[in-house]
Amino acid sequence: MNEKTIEIKHKMKKVLDKDRYQHTLGVAYTASCLAMRYELDPERLFLAGLLHDCAKNIPNGEKYALCKKYKIVLNEIEKKAPSLVHAKLGAYLTEHTYGVKDPEIINAVRNHTTGRPGMSLFEKIIFTADYIELHRDQAPNLPEIRHMAFTDLDDAVRKILSDTLDFLGSKDRPVDPMTKQTYDYYMAHKH
Ligand code: DGI
Ligand code: FE
Ligand code: FE
Image (cartoon, rainbow, N blue to C red; front, side, top):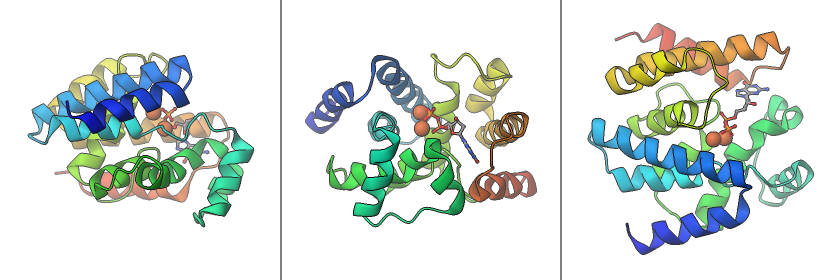
């Protein structure tokens, strides 16, 4: 691993709590395995996995203050649901605080929570690795989705989105329009 990756790993250990850091390592290793499967650069995916939740442990009030300071535009749902904000804020910090200029990495961090229609392979790997890594144990259908991730990544993305929409519905949480648009896109683009 190159110096930059090791430096970012040390920084994430400092800014994340214990469980979040373990999840982060899980995403990094899972994303690098998926990169091997789909013939992308495993270390680049490892670095994206390390950074994907870099803004997660910032207190909610501070998250919103930082978005204002950095002129990050939030939609109406993001303004009300703090759990969504770490994605866009994390993309900004990836570039400007952690100095990672690789646009694929920045994009993958930005879109890792809601996905987006027409994700790149790189983005789909981070989106999926976040959901299936080893420390995840609450989501339904994990064995099936873990298998799909290595056989048909788009099927995995579809199942993650439909299970996420079911989960949000069951909790009466507002759905980000991007989550719904991503779901509609992948349902309309089956192979
Ligand atoms: O940051 P992680 O916990 O690793 O995972 P994540 O970035 O996928 O964030 C998951 C959280 O985001 C989870 O609490 C569900 C929530 N979420 C995902 N899509 C939506 C959403 N919350 C709302 N309100 N609306 C969404 O569309
Ligand atoms: Fe996240
Ligand atoms: Fe995550």
